[in-house]
Image (cartoon, rainbow, N blue to C red):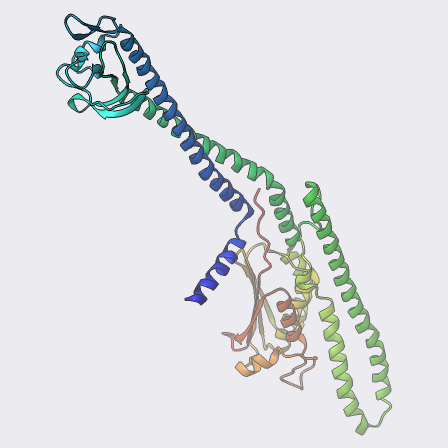
Length: 462
């Protein structure tokens, strides 16, 4: 259990580390609005309730002062008298919800006609106080009351003024509905405005992301630096890194190519010198020189392959391969081999033209060398990857031979001409472009080579 408790926060942090900046900002805004508006609404509601209740109590208190000023004691009749009009007919209507009462708690009691035969509960209070009480017929009343002394009575009189508080409750309820409705509307408005602000603020990042995609697809060489200062500096630094990587790649290719070319001349001289040696000593030297020459030509071809280190603008596959295939067609015709080509429409790929020519040329050269009478080339695309299939009707290979064929310098028939590097170079090129190479037996009995490359250029949305 302790291990799970320690792993869970780490998993949660990793999960949130992948969330977008927009989502994080919107969630922060949502939390802020979700906390601030309810707190503000609660405080405003409490303040309004207190203010409305106080105003209601003050109104009742003013009425109580009028009643208190108009009460007298009739010595002759020995009863309380109130002869001042209040100017509010609700105190005359029975059970209207507005009542007043004067009593000493014993024999002297005077009440409004609206109270009829009911009486208000009494508590001792020397100062003005307010409270809520139940009234006649289940009414909820707000009462303001106090005790006074009236000569010649020795017992204090308790004066109460009460009114139904449903009007107050309705007023408070209406305010709360308007308040919370307004706060919800304000929250939605703030969320929408802040969402627009986040989208507008992150627009340069989205533009930079799209620009990076353009660079990856080969449609641009550098990032656009027309960005806010913070991002412009980052874009300039990334452009410097891209330019440096490009220079390093080109320098490496040129250095390897120059080295391979430099070695070819001494090898040619050594071959000429071998012809002057006796036949018995020549064979061993020729084998070693052939190995060196094979390695030189392999690394020369390998150095010329750009691969995934560089992003290329899309090229038309048919136009790029047309000169190569025309030459191969003439070669096949001289050898009496039928060369068939199948194209699945126009295909554009993100590859170096020399790389795709090297790949197809090696596969076709190998097929023409082993075929009896038929070689087929098929190129198709599913919109995401290029599938290149080359098959012949030659002797073919079994499963073990297919695995050996892609090994560098491995030759399955030592009597045939060639260095055995063709499929090995193809394997390197396929790996450079993150593709896959499959060897199997063709339906015609020969070798079938299938190359799958994720290099197809997608159509840009207009």
